Each structure stands twice: as structure tokens, then as C-alpha cells.
Image (cartoon, rainbow, N blue to C red; front, side, top):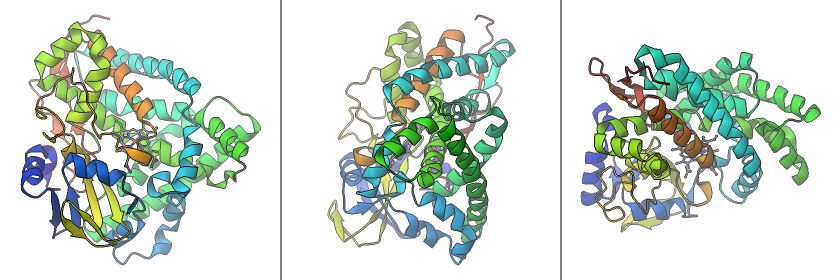
Length: 406
Ligand code: HEM
């Protein structure tokens, strides 16, 4: 499943797994993998499955001394994505305060201006790499901006976030490789935490409208210690970068691979919301997620022992014909479209509203300003082939648009 060629196009393999062995035990890796919609959807809501993946991660790190990564462990000890109720409920309620209707409305202009600025830089070149020119810098600018991080700190922030995300997205990989990445993540945790602590202190004295200020108010109102706030901020900051980058690239790729759908969207831009949902269903940037069985469970007739790691195949579930009519067809008007790209239940992506806004504005602007968008016939798109990363996207996606229209 994590072989480079399977990662580039996992859907044929998912199809086989769904029909031959939908609750599959992968002996070589020691994981269970769920590929049917109904099993994955039930699993994300199953209280017997834990989101605390620390035991799994420690296992992957082999004999590495925990002291070497204590800063990383400390940082992630307050991450809502790693918690079960009741602690998850408390953290999630606080985090929700960073996503108020007013805040979300402010983001609209930040996203529009950033997209326009990025397209200004390539408009007259006749071509670009969707990944490096748009999909990376877009969330890379927007997320720090929403948190009110000074421009001088942004490059460091993005590097630290990447080092921390990497260790989260890992499955497999040699223990030596994992240990090396873990040490890097530990170093990033120290520097990232210091910067955010500094910002929390500054916003406490001089509140603004940024997300750190909103979260400070939520913490103070609930009477919680601000000590854990840097950790909460860093999870939100890190979770919003690569996921969105990869989804932008996957979405543009899906459109360019289906010219009739691309034309339909260009003719009727009001289809953008359902088009974005279909892009996420069709080729999600987060195709897998882990849970750990807290007790013995039976899923799809298979007995799974307490302590087992279970991979939830969100990408596979999104192509299940039991749920979606003609799932291999990319249809931007698909309704209903209850995909699991943002998961479901209590861990449903807290940033979904922002991700949807970024995708909607980015793609609408892209097609309006560069109507002749097409694959670059002289260059090859390069899907991310990293065999140990669970995110799915592109390292490079070269396109042409020639026109000089604004
Ligand atoms: C297209 C882009 C995105 C995709 C596909 C995506 C996907 C997901 C998925 C599948 C989960 C749930 C995992 C689970 O069930 O445990 C999740 C959780 C989360 N996401 Fe996203 N995400 C995206 C963008 C964002 C953005 C922009 C942010 C923040 C700015 C963000 C922040 C988070 C956080 C903090 C969680 C943990 C929520 C919790 O455990 O309660 N994500 N995301």
C-alpha cells in the first residue's frame, strides 16, 4: 500500500481491497486497514478506538531514547488530534473560538489578495508550477497571516511546521530514518514553541483580531492556563499547511485530467462549491488516518485485538460504490457528496471552513485569470512518491496558460 507506485495511484488497489478483504491485516506492517465507507465512517465515530497515537509512534522510533524527543512529546501532549474525550472535548471547544464567523469573514480578503498576488507574479510568464508557485505559498502566507506572525519569522515557522508535520505523517520507514526525523522535529518543537510563547505574551498585552488573540480570550474566559496555548496554536498552524497545499494540487490535476468538467466549471463558476467537494472526494490529500483499538473490537467480522493500529482509509471510502454512484467518475455537480475527506464525528477537521474557502477562492481566481490553463506538454507532473508519508499530493505540477489576459 505504501509502495511508491501504489501511492501515485492507490485507487485500483483500494478497489481490490474493498472487494476482496475490506478489513485487511497487513502482516508486514502490523496494521489493520479499513477501505469500506461504512467501516471507516463507523470507525471515526467509535469511542473504542483512540486517537492517541503515541504508542504507535514510539514503536516506530525503535530504541530511540525518549529524552531525545521530550520537547516534541511535550508539544504534542496537548494536541486535540491526539486526544480522546473528555480532554479532546475541552481542547476542541477552545480551538473552535479561533474560527468565529467574524474571523472567517476577515480571511476572505486575505485569501483573495494572496491568490491575486501570487498569480500576478506568473501571469506574464505563460506557465507555472502549480505546486511551488501557488499551492505551497498560498497557505504558507495565509496561515501565518491569520495568526499575526511577522513576515521576518514566517520562513522559519514554515520550516519548523514541516519538520513537525513530517513525523506525524509517517508510516513505515526505517527506524533510523524515523529517529533522525524525530530529532529534527524535537529541535523544531523548541524553536516553534519559543516563537509562539513570545507572540502569546505580546498579544496578551496588546490584543488584536488574529487567531492567537481570539484563543487567548477563549482561554481566559474559561479560566484555563495559557501555558498550553502555544501547543494548540502550533497544531492548528501545522495542520493547515501541507494538507491544503496537496489538496490544491490534487484539485487542479483532477480538473485538467477531465476537460469536460473543467469547461463546465469555466462556463458556470457558481458550481465551484460542489466542484471543490468533488475534488476532495475524488483525490483527497489525507487518504489515511490512524486509530488505536482501546479494547478488543470486531469490525466487518474480523477480531481486532486491543492495542492494534488501525488505518482508516478515508481515500478508499470516498471511492466506495456502496456509497457513491460511479465513484471513479469525476463529477463536479455530484450531490449529495458526503465524502470523508475531512473525516467525521468529533475529530472532523476544525480547519475545514478555512480549507474550503482557500480552495474555492484559489480555483475560482485561477480559472478566471488563466482561462487557457492546461498541462504543460513539455514537462512531467511529479506525484509525491515519498513512501513513508501519508499525505498525497504533487512535488511538481507544471501548467501552461500563455494568455496575457488579466
Ligand atoms: C484540504 C485541506 C485539509 C484536509 C483534507 C484536512 C483533513 C483532516 C482530517 C481528515 C482530519 C481528521 C482526522 C481524524 O479523524 O482524526 C483533520 C483534523 C484536523 N485538521 Fe484538517 N484538513 C485540512 C485542512 C486543515 C486546515 C486549513 C486546518 C487549520 C488551519 C486544519 C486543522 C486541523 C486540526 C487542528 C485537526 C484536529 C481536529 C480534532 O482532532 O478535533 N486542517 N483534518
